[in-house]
Length: 393
Ligand code: FAD
Image 1 (cartoon, rainbow, N blue to C red):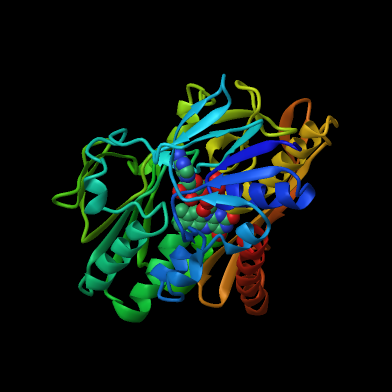
Image 2 (cartoon, rainbow, N blue to C red):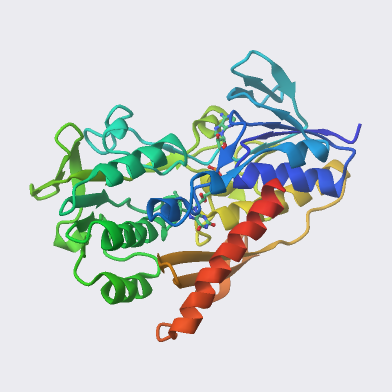
């Protein structure tokens, strides 16, 4: 046969890999393992929190992949046997592979932040995986009285979606401004700088005045303890902050199946060969998306999609006995600060001497006028529609 490829995870990376494997060589047997029948994207869930979109608008199914000939199995991969080259799912079935693609996204390091475990997330949601957690946070914001305080505990690097927390702040601020104008937002950050910072802070001042207070590491912004019962957090130097709605975005690591497959290193993430995205540790396992160590590329849906295409091409070539080709990558992350006010950052990446380097890129201009910002907001929607189409069809 032309080969068997198993793909674990039907998010940005996994769905793209499955699709592009089939497109490049329909004779390859491709099996995609993903528990969810409807995948909900994290991108644009901040706009849902802002009241600008429904959650359903971010939901995608696997009909298109099935139509392409991908076998979609709605189950959870429990174990990988890298010697026998098999994947076992929770339902008991075992799938043999010649090549395996893992795109499991992130898992959380529960209790790495004292007091923040799975039970605490039911009271102080992270909403960093889309679905029930996102709805919980929205419900809490809707129930909060005008004049309440929304506290976000921002994550340390590296984490999924560098501008994501700050877009969320913007969208919650938009919701407050239009619905609960006496409310306040406090961001407690274990970093002194963040993605698109100048553009965000300019936009915050312009639209939300003094509603948002951002406390960096150097001003005691690092939270070390969470009490989800009282919605109180404690900083490194012992200051306590009480929230009405508490959003904790905890420390992260590669999705647990990567650890079980033996491809993670001591950092909890997956080192890869950047030319192919094959694991640096275990042959015939390719890992893409948030789970990988691929800095300076950010952990974004755009990047997961780009890496998946590179891995798919490398697998098709390897199965046909052809060498891999040299990849290059691009990323753009749009963020929305207010309904007609978008900003962006773009990067172009290449592999040099076995390392990923940024060869070009930059931010959208600081002094852009209102028409430009409105266009960027529209480009953001166009980007979302295009990548959703490219990934799930
Ligand atoms: P995911 O898309 O999370 O997919 C992983 C899939 O694997 C999941 O469906 C999961 O169910 C499945 N899975 C995990 N373990 C197993 C297993 N053992 N067996 C079977 N299936 C498994 N990115 C952008 O490019 N632009 C944006 O505007 C943007 N906005 C964001 C906003 C927010 C609030 C957040 C949190 C993220 C945002 N991102 C954005 C980042 C983006 O969501 C991630 O980078 C992207 O989802 C990574 O793709 P992935 O394939 O690695 O993981």
